Image 1 (cartoon, helix red, strand yellow):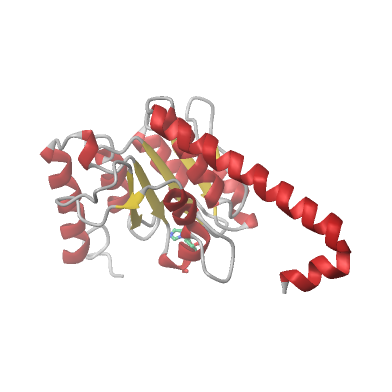
Image 2: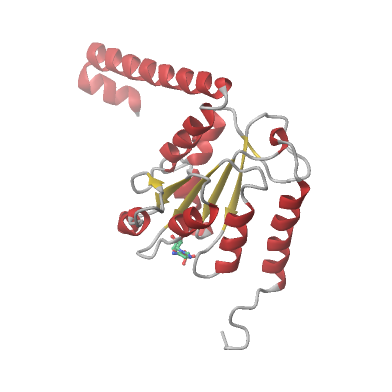
Amino acid sequence: MSDETNGVATPELTSLMESLEAEAAQDRPAEETPEIGIVMGSDSDLDVMMGSETGRPGAYDALTTLDFAEQTDHESPPDERFTFETYVVSAHRTPELMYTYAETAADRGIDVIIAGAGGKSADLPNMVASIAYPIPVIGVPVQEKSLQSVIGMPQGAPLVAVDAGKSFNAALSAVQMLSLEHDELRERLVEYHENLKDDVAVASKRLHSLGTPGFKAQRE
Ligand code: AIR
């Protein structure tokens, strides 16, 4: 990148930032805007952040299990009452987009942000937390080596974070925050937890009654 282009947003970037700003100016009712904003530093973070068929489940899986829908068009929200949105925002490649996203989040109806980044300079969660303050931000270190970078915030600049790769839990934490205001979400979280208990009980009974070889054979 030459000095002349440094700091100048490209047309694609400009149009994305303009659409975020336009959405912020719309002042839509809370029922029509996403409660949760998910941002990740690169689309290479997608499997960790949202989950993958072959790897661990992620934020997408947690939120859809709790009957949230992904909102892909600000103008036409899904029927589901609670929704989330997803963007790629790089703190280092697109600092202006990071700033615009975080600064417009509250006016766009976002109540809580989940931000994930990888590598050793995983600065997106903490920078978004600083700019979007007082909106709570849940940081997801995409890799183990990102952990220190995500959690190392100075006093007075808060960020909560999950362990490396635990975007599923980040989503549950986000819904816990929302449930302080929405009893319906509290009920969904309680039901989810009861199902977890059942899953453990069922596995325990089966392991005990089938024995280790039988249990392993049934799993395959
Ligand atoms: N990243 C992207 N912009 C700033 C940072 N720190 C992170 C992404 C990703 C890693 O760098 O969150 O985990 C590598 O990104 P890529 O796009 O090269 O695969």
